Length: 118
Image (tube, rainbow, N blue to C red):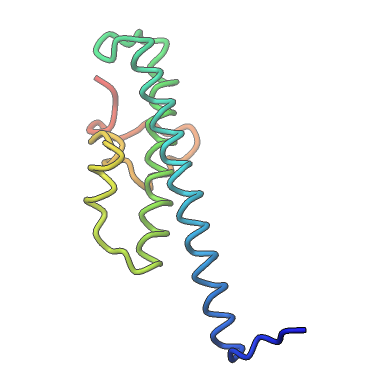
């Protein structure tokens, strides 16, 4: 029977790092999925000609992608990875998603003019 001779602190550190990596992977996949849903919506509806009735649905996708981006950036920063420019390039994150990163609009409120669809 083999015994682990590492100090408990080393074992705990290893498990924490392992969970951080796992969380980073989950957050990255969530960002990819939310950006994919937004791109699929845009492909199905010409982005410049989104009908008025479909704008709230698109806005919701943009906000969801912004939230996923925020969660991923926060998780990376908690892991010591401070430069988020790499994420923006690698995942090709649209500017409108970057601008609403971390926003959680109050129920029934309208987004600020700079975030409203045009």
